[in-house]
Length: 290
Image (cartoon, rainbow, N blue to C red):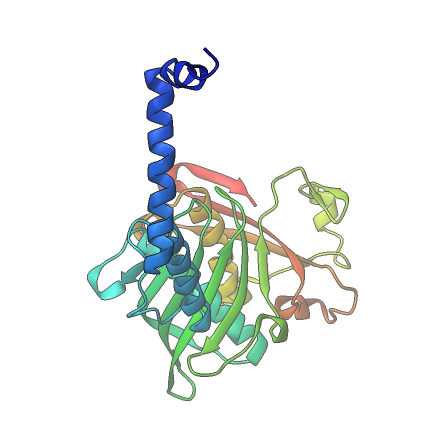
């Protein structure tokens, strides 16, 4: 009787248990053979391929990624050849102009975008744009190819950083450049731990606090219109050039965030300032301040 027990126990296993035993033995055999053959597991190969892809992207700064490919079905940068067309052209062109504005602001130049060559971006609601463009400086006739990096931080409103804007071929690191940061402020938001509100009419009359930009200065400082268009396009990326061409700036005030911006019109060149703009965009039924 005692001798028959092991056999009875074995026969009492259910078919599901027998199937599990068979699968376990099969898995052990699979992994043993895989290890002995030195063949990489598909999941491990996929992870390794992703790491290698992003390593190469980082090496080139995300700009010139021709010939760099990620494993099929994994995350990668989306490439756009601007000669072949691309989505939201007004919006993307403004990003390119913003990057070049950062370069001009820091280098004291006046390069203007003449051609957007290509850009790469992440496929997320918030993305990083790696842009390559050609720009010309009218006064000198100099033509240069630039690389511009624009980071988005918030969806549906202007909150951007431009950490890189450089002539292609001139290397720089994020720690050695001064980033340009733009952020639009709603009527009631926190700014430097204080509640930000649109100033009253009486407040704007305080010439020590605010500088009212002259109409000619608005025309000469194209960045004012650029910033406003960026605010509008961040709120609605479907805005077309035909809409933006009807944009009319009414008044502009600048409140510098540093005391040494003197004389008052020096605030037009301040690296840190609050800009208040009233405008009209009748084509979209918009009339508001920012």
